[in-house]
Length: 389
Image (cartoon, rainbow, N blue to C red; front, side, top):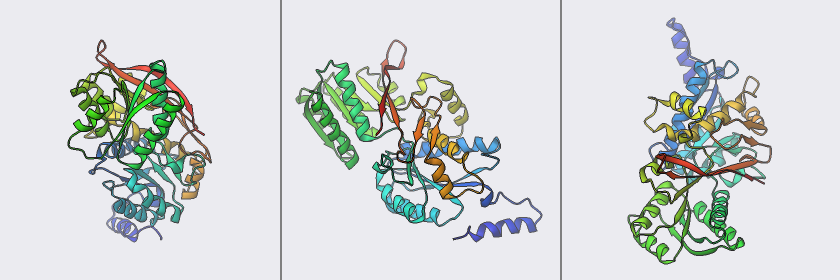
């Protein structure tokens, strides 16, 4: 299908009136973004979409990429599969769009991937968990910059608990009643058992849950002294708070989504340990100051929520710089198949994509905890590299 006729008619009308013509679609890199902005994962999808917009507004103001602007078509799918599939179908039907970005929950993945494969359209997952299709051997069209990946994350968390406890941790595991969370925690249990750690509980909590006390009571009664959880932030933090309310005083490893930096400052609990593959804005690196300055006044979200979208934008910019004009889906896919993405410190190291690995060849984890003396979260375990095979 050719570029929508309304674009051509609009340009012709403006020329007839003597007004300057708008930038034609063919003179820009066109990207479709389907994100959860007002749905159950809006706390992640919304900031990711905003960060992409803010990043490319600045790129365009500085002359674009290779002299061409980047144009974004952003739509709200509310993490609904049907809406995401309709977005993807619309994007793939527009010959000018060369990349889809998805920033929403996993129910949207299959509909988007189906349309992507039909049309040969590359997809970048950002702000949502990385699907298995981006791990080796990767699907040729699927890529992911998201910081988190369930099985790799829980494997690191268990390894850290083993290390920090001298091999004596008694573990309680908490998953959310969604397949990827359960699979991640089940993998973590296998890793723990291989390391000789005792796992005394595994509670799976359905979202939403009005009362976390029954789950917290079972976990506390199991005599666990370390907890590991991975899933939506709301479930992770509420089970932790429920256990504290029951008087449990052990250490709990929570996966640190973007929202967690502000949350750990709210709770100020040194036993809440965040394991992350993204650095915290509290680290005060030049990139953090740059993101904060660029986003100030241009988003309703805290600037500490911008990491996922910013890294996705860095990846897109790095890929498009390699694409000879005019762009095509095939050219963009080829560029993304062999790329090193400099995150400037937002992650522990550059993200490297190869033809068979569209996640990254290495991932690095940090562990943060609240430091009362400095009144901010501090690193308690610095970057630990994990090879992705």
